[in-house]
Image (cartoon, rainbow over all chains, first blue to last red):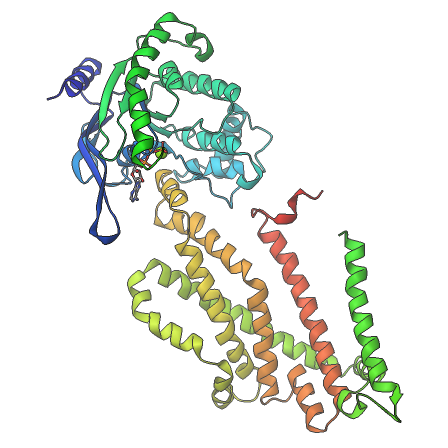
Length: 282
Length: 262
Ligand SMILES: Nc1ncnc2c1ncn2[C@@H]1O[C@H](COP(=O)(O)OP(=O)(O)OP(=O)(O)O)[C@@H](O)[C@H]1O
Ligand SMILES: [Mg+2]
């Protein structure tokens, strides 16, 4: 066992027996044209305890979204296994809500219908589902935009509708792929605080992908760093011991925050540079 | 360009064309017009004929029959196209087996089918409906097939993560996507339904716009042929306008180029 894996195992043991998400020695390869095989992620192990907020940070193209897809049960790993609350995952992960990196709203449904649908599939009456959807739209700051279709919303507004769409179902596990990517700095903080607020209310397990190391530290209990692809690995796992509840803008003033940021960035920087070089950048 | 200018310019095209037609067929050059009215008729004769049809009321029956044939062809062809399109898209193996036959039948010029349909369905409206159906079916079929196939994989994954079962996927994802593709081809399929009806009538019938045009042609009544074509053109434009209205209601969720206009 590597040091990293030991740290993960120890962490899981402290937090409770059954991690909400456990990826065990997961390798993901894609078959490409001409029998060429591209290994995106190699032997990655990662666990998220119930109620834990874990961020994945890594250079672009390293396989963060791919790992989330495995945790969601949308993609079967080439080797290794994924378990959800101790059960081996086969097929879709029904306990998880997934906020996709790409646009995933139903373009033919209005914002409010998009949010309500997650309840309607669970046989909640349409009227009730829409009332709750309206509450959620208000929470993400789009209370008066319910009648708009996705193409009438900005990229950031669409992300927020997506957030409401996922959260309304109250999943036990939240998988979020750069949910705040297209938001401006202010809205990012507001949404981050909103997320922390929701999270501290019922402590879901969160697996959160971001490019933004500061954001990762400010939100998370643990920050996991991936190396540049191909065959990306998990190369670091830091525990964030900043006090909760946190306010995102305030926590960034904490000296402990800066120390941790410097430490992780040292490691990440080299990988980011490698990441560009390996996909043919200058 | 604003609306008024646009309509004015469109009208101008018609006026100029008719004027040229008028001049060429009525102003004598060397004793006779450049375009002899026997072959080209004249705008006045044609207008007179159209007025006569409508004032006597004989045209309504023919219009109604063509309309009925086109509508039936559209409804039946679309229904078949939607069902088979869905079926093939959801069952790739079935689609693979039938693929060459679908292509072969679609490549067949429909006009060769007309006599067979007359034989099978008689001289009444149903042989024309059948011809229209063979045209409409393939357009709708291809679009629905495409619409089901081309659903964004992310949207589909999202739908499944949101807990949709197969039936709900059908209703909330595949169906709207297929419909949007079908509606985007609405103009074409409605147009082909009319073409099927008129061509069918032209090849053998007792009523309809195609029949009127054919009758006029057989007696070298050029004014009648032109009048028939004008009525047909107006008929098609009216139908097309209605399709545009329907489309605008049904595809509100689609981004449109003209949207920034207030
Ligand atoms: N279906 C696929 N077929 C082939 N290669 C793929 C496929 N999906 C992803 N990849 C490759 O796997 C690697 C990881 O992709 P992934 O989308 O997980 O990156 P990421 O870390 O999420 O990047 P970003 O931060 O830019 O979103 C990339 O190099 C990508 O090209
Ligand atoms: Mg990604």
